[in-house]
Image (tube, rainbow, N blue to C red; front, side):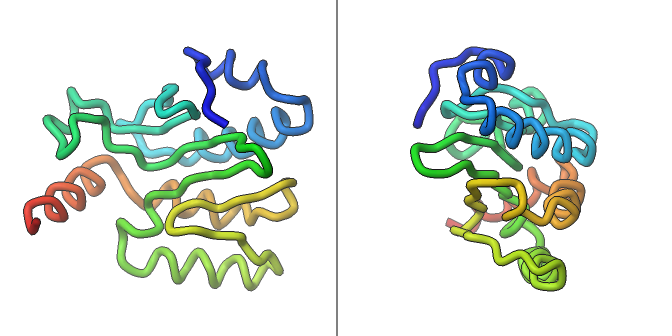
Length: 148
């Protein structure tokens, strides 16, 4: 469900209380582990954590490089962890940490879908968020698009 909210506060305010509380808890983990240089913004109709274009320079699509995002969808909530495919081995570590904690994530390529917080391993999310500083994301993106 795409939102037209212009601020994170507006986005959270338009959610039902249970979803707002869940996304606020994940947001707190993201903000507490987000490396310096990323900014929290509204982009693509969701809460987004990005490298500003002023830092990264031009990108392949003219958009800021996103490391993570939070969204309330029609049937679930999602945390998008782009670091899962940016750093070799981090997806395997994330999945192993989830298994160890007894959580079986409902995942896409970078999307972890959930309906309640108990379906997330917050420590594993914190590790993924902290694992990719902006300069690493810029390097990975640049190298990826240079090869094309």
